[in-house]
Image 1 (cartoon, rainbow, N blue to C red):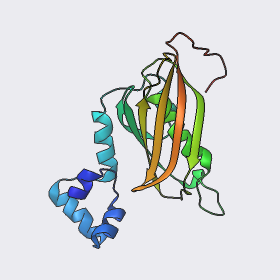
Image 2 (image 1 turned 30 degrees about the vertical axis):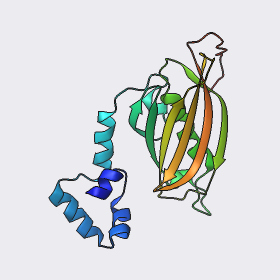
Image 3 (image 1 turned 45 degrees about the vertical axis):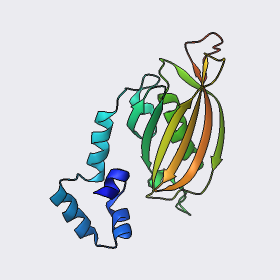
Length: 184
């Protein structure tokens, strides 16, 4: 229970490795303790999210948003599937990992229109087929600029950081906003 409370995104497989017990033991114990499976926990967290995405339709967000506090923070989960990897290596194409982070950075902005102005990104390690990417976004103050917001995004697989991005996002409200056709 403590491990799941600390990390609600932990999988049954990860718990078997950490606790050195069989998958059946994990599933039975979860059932006995009334702890739902990962997918159900994610759905419950998403329902409890405080705010709704304003800047883009939910179907355009890459990954599942499980927590959102507009203009503060957000969390999304993206599972790397067959269609996201290079067939020869099973390594995720970088644009999928970037897209999760970028769409979360835009989604966390409390505005009708928010577009990516710039991104300073770093891939820390390869992400592989079957891994779950957990992206966490934090809106940071950007002094003297009402038309833009700074969003830091950190993506993890388990406890290991795999991606880091610093995004500057245009807001549709603000003095110096050059939003135009063809933006992100």
